[in-house]
Length: 88
Image (tube, rainbow, N blue to C red):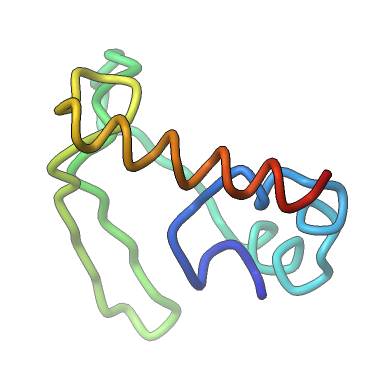
């Protein structure tokens, strides 16, 4: 399953996922354009313009790496830990 079809997790950075032909093909069609905001934490809102000129937009309420609730942090830890132990 390509990484853009689900929530991003540790498994998406394994060798197989990083070399998945569908994911690589998709990533080659992506062009990131900033609107002049030099803040590296300014990841939201995200806007995507499709080939047919439609524009899709989403605001990300929680950008991991920034301050998140204890519950969200623990949920992410447990998800990542389960992923790491499953692959060992």
